[in-house]
Length: 136
Figure: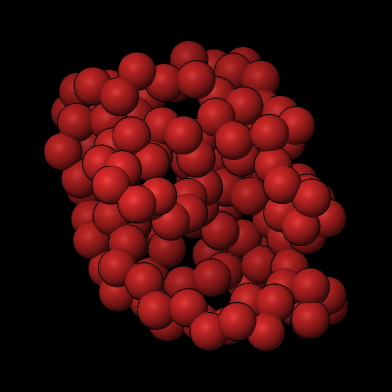
C-alpha cells in the first residue's frame, strides 16, 4: 500500500506513516475527494469509478500543527500497476514541508518500522485494502 511519511510541524522529531487523504470540500462526494487527494498528494490520476465501495470507515481524533481534528474516515482501495510514478508537486507548502518520502509497504513492513503511524489500526486497514484489490 502506498503510504506517506512525515511529521507534525510542531513535533518534527515525532515521525510517522500515514495514508493519502484529506477533507472533502463542501458538497464534494467522498469518491471525488479521494480522487482529488490522490492527484494533489502523490500525483496519481484515477478514474472515480475505480474506487468502488469503501473498504473501511473509522473515527479518529488527533492534533496536527496545533489544530485539533475530529474526523470520520472512509477508506477506498484500488490496484495500481507497478512503477506508477509518485510526485509531491501538487501538495500545498505546509504538506510539502512536512512530508519527506513515500513507500509501498505491506502491513508487516509497517509494523516492523521504527517510526510510528497515525493510527495503530493502520496495518489492519492495509490488510483490508489488499483483500479488496485481490478480489477485483
